Length: 115
Ligand SMILES: [Zn+2]
Image 1 (cartoon, rainbow, N blue to C red):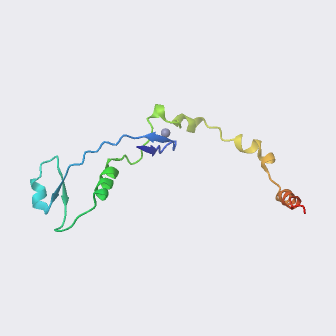
Image 2: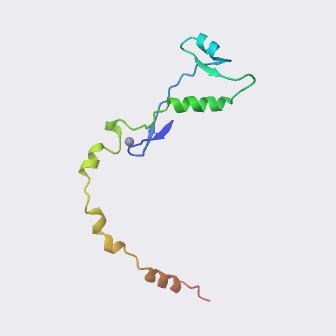
């Protein structure tokens, strides 16, 4: 599956390996008797939960909280934070980027359909 790297926000492949070993039990006593490799799933009598809910829970548990690329593979190196110039990008083109709203309005007016 693909998740977003929490550092560079680029998609990254994430292998989720989760072994689901649930055993439905009716009470704490039964849960106690389960072998270690089984997770008890305590259900009330006649209670049932959709399998999809179960899988979703297990998947969320298996997912890392904040997945990030390995440092060498990440698109956003930590060094970039330190070396990033703080001035220059904003000021250079500021004047050209300014849009005169009245100029735009004039353009719109001149585009009246001719009949
Ligand atoms: Zn990344």
